[in-house]
Length: 316
Length: 179
Image (tube, rainbow over all chains, first blue to last red; front, side):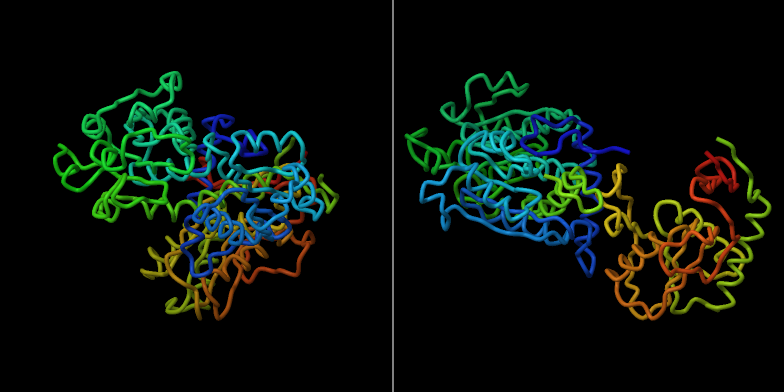
């Protein structure tokens, strides 16, 4: 019987290729579950999960909460904006106070890279990283890869270009780790100022020319320009960015073959992609959102199965 | 480990014919009845019965599905065994239908309990019946009994009933394994 090689999901970096396949195969079954008339299974009815969001999120947070509820877990939500974090409490203290309420699993989004890894060294509960700064966003990368697998049957050999703000993107890093482990070819494309130095060491190629990148790829994953993480001006103007790195319908029509368009959301319509592209038949953006629930159910289920509960004995 | 043959290919064939016959006796033309095999092992038995009903009783178009109960089991996180899911394939709803649940071995009854819960996700059946090939009587944890049964077997707890199917294991046979 296979199980995950890890008991926390801190980043894709820590996963093996077999872990990725196990997650996808489990998510296939959950995708069937969430398309039933009654979309709920009782597996996690004795598990309590805390969603700790120290940074804003709509999609990821709703997706996690829905996944937890569909697995019958008890859920508590916490957001930094309305909490004692503003009064100066440390991360470990905040989390330990929540764990004192007998919580088994923590889903955490945090603005600081490595927050999940740090927390895993200080607490006993299982941790799922829902995004840590510009570091990793493992569940997003898994749902992206799952959506590619769904459309193309497999990921190995596929050509994927990630376009936009690679420097500030946790989605880009987790996607690169995932796709490389699964045998895809990956290029990144964006203004020089938004491409991290030494990114080639991750096994990806840099293609500064958008047209060439799109002509090469099967799938383009369009990232949002993360203005909130930018401490100074990385490109002269939004207008110039759109002209060089934005995708619109007429640009796609000039390509020799149709390509699949992905976007992790939220979309800045008219910046990285125009509305006619986002809503076109080649876009799988809403499939990504649907798959997000199935993937998160699979991850929570597989991580929870590592929390052993022998006849109700306390397990932390 | 020793193994004893309980049923050979011929005996299994006779039992399958009898079970199919009993189903027809109770469900006639299967107008509002459905067959559901419990994944993974019950589906082999359900496949066979479905085929006999089609070929020998000319009952085409009986709604037939496969139900995976992994997410409904009551031993999640309670053993060292990781529960791995199988495919569920039910493309109809069971509202007001007579459902025949099909599994190979009835032991503690816990799988059937999980299947009854899982089935609720597909509607409210008018009636649920249980068909099993082997009934390990005297080893039930829950008040669950089969409506149709192949063979009753007395086996103690460290014994294991192994059901082999030609399509999966190379032969139709049922063994009792002893540690």
